[in-house]
Length: 168
Image (cartoon, rainbow, N blue to C red):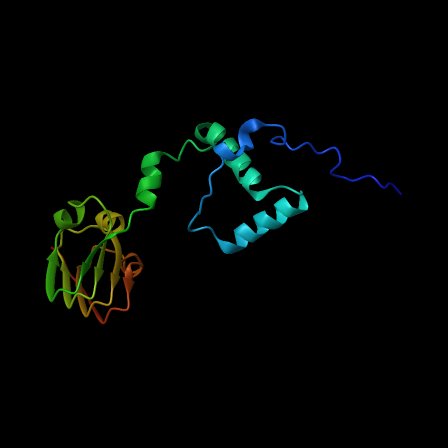
């Protein structure tokens, strides 16, 4: 049986680097990290007898250096749009919405707590899916029959009356 340390030959790539002197270090806080993923990361770095700051720095350096090759589908624009909060229309009595109304803001819209929400016959399936985030807590919704029922219901939460009307 060997008394050798399995990490004995492990060379910390940052140990001799001047990269981690006090002037180059910064304390940061990262919001929105899943707790279980963070705990797994911490446990893995402990098992490897690594400093978490060094491990995160190395990970970020690797991602930055290979980001465009590894993730060509991710652009700054796609990250910006993924973090957008939908436009919210809240608490109106009667509201009639056309296809143009939905398309004009250029972002998804949530309708919340509208008493009577009515969609024009020109609202089609693609516009509905692209432009509406959610319809929540509305008393009455009036919508054209050009939308498949499950597509329609996929965006509606906790609404009282849904009327699907015939279009010409």
